[in-house]
Image 1 (cartoon, rainbow, N blue to C red):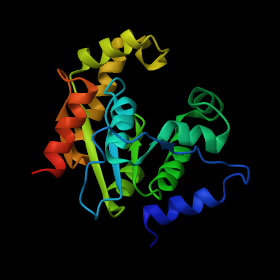
Image 2: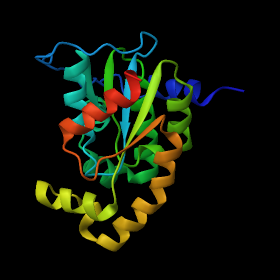
Image 3: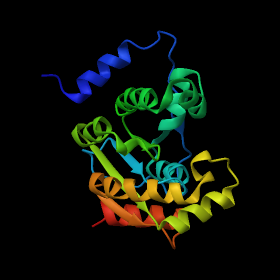
Image 4: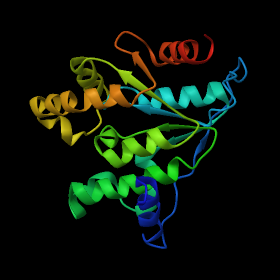
Length: 209
């Protein structure tokens, strides 16, 4: 019996030969110098609902560590040559999630990388198994109440079709929340924290105990 990771990697290899990967972002090193972390960790994964600050915190964290930053949605778009909305429209959610799983398997092959997941990535069992079974991987859940996350998204003024129906978006949040928490090695409450404070709390909670 093949493992979920083996099946996903096989599917990856059968995708279009024209696939490319989104380049990881080399973040400038913090003025304080790189923060040391345990040598056995090779990637940090940020998960949470939209508005949690995964990309913002991820870039700041990568700079503090002198690591690279990789956004899974950007990685998927580069591999397929299409935007996330286009993939949903052309293929439907089921096929999109399969493509997302292959992109995740690819992203988890990067070392010294902070990886920001899509909000729905943990919904798929395959993705949860990939994250749990990939060695040297540490997952952090950036948590906050739904009203806080919703307000952040509105302030960002970015088109998010999922939030067009706030009640449906809240139901989606409630469905995902226990998955985020169960998957995470560390949960951080970011409701009253700036991205910089979140990074400080993450590094203190995780690596300097």
